[in-house]
Image (cartoon, rainbow over all chains, first blue to last red):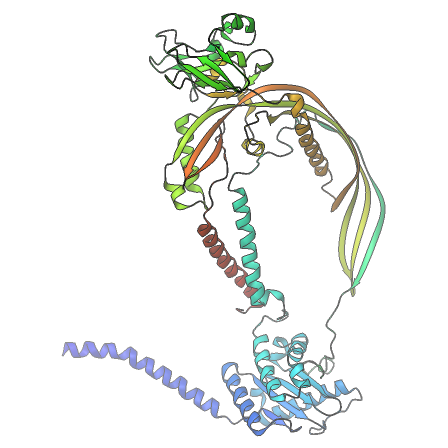
Length: 272
Length: 355
């Protein structure tokens, strides 16, 4: 009897653990099943298969971090009601904002943390990357621009499927950085990290090898007779000042669509 | 002419003891304080006397000289630079007085303070510390020979008078609106210095590697003694090959560098400085022919001989040890990986993400 009890006690934690995993599994099942449409191909530039793949990919990202990775393509910029702008770049941002407003209307504010890739394939040929709500900080204007720069070549080549895929992976990568940090800093590049560490290692080793035979430990003060040595005369005449002005390159992209309206998100993009 | 210091008690040969700084009789244990010894025993002013009694110097040509040991009568042939040695037959300390008199009389000496045993121990310890030396080198006891040697040096007292004209700048950088502004202020800077240097040593022996000897410095001059022959008892000593005049260009160049360093130090407030003109006048004040103590160690490793020198006063060791390629590579790898981890952590601290 005692033995039997003992065995049971061992089983208890295992059972609890099983319950925990089961509940976790069930919850993800439920969340995954929420039917959210995240790819809107009005411009009809994605194949059915690509669309499905992107939906799936976007859904998997959502499960991971609860951020919606949205894609909208257009050839007319007329799908959503909004104020218009004669500035085509800004108009594209307004379109993106209108699309976002519509998305929130449909799915509610629980789905408000979004990043949107808007591809305008009209003659304008402009793409806009934007971050909304929580992603406004994590995906600031600068990072939006970086995402665009990374997918620009795919867009130009007309490889929209890959461009959309890359957009998601770059956004996913960039939002993991601390806010305000440029993800393109050289210190984040693996090749640079390796080069730097082994470069320093090489220098240290060279110094060690050179100094293995002992180094000179005297300097100019070793034999100096301090008591009798002196500075007999000196002057320091100021002659002139030269000034060099260099303009600081700020990343002034076509961003800031939302900054004026307050409620909008971060933006970055360009023509392709 | 051979000087051999005999014990007043038992008549045995005495040698200099580095630990006590006295002459020591290995037979009866008598210690004699060198500074208390009879000045007449010194070689400096008794050259003529030596010449009259110098029957032991029996053979002389340009290459080698023959001396006869007073103890055993053995004939010892030395090369022309040796001024102190030991008899190869009976091991008695022999000081070759005719090479320490007249022009060749040293004025100063720093006696050994590190004994042979201490030198050996210190060297073994130093070998073990070598990060890059092969394992066998670290553990094996392969000291082939260890020789206490008084190396001839000239010590120079110099006075330098220099005027230096320099273009200096102060750079300030700040941002103003959209601009980064770099402001460079130019100055015409002048310094006139009068500097004195005491006892800069220059190795006067042809056999010794100049760089090796430079690395042995500094010697502690607090223990600089007036030269007396008993200090050499039991050691090898060399006489100089180069006169102070011959070595003067070398010390002058060194002094010029020292003076420039001194002047540079007075211009620290500036971001940059370029000497445009200088007039330097260096005058030697005194020179002292001095014997400095060096332990020369010959070490055999994998059929190669490695020579090391140890400062016989401070214990500093110099000389090229063998380098193990494997160890260099391993250390390089470990250090590289360690640094890589550090770089990663820095990247993480900046970016907040492991990349």
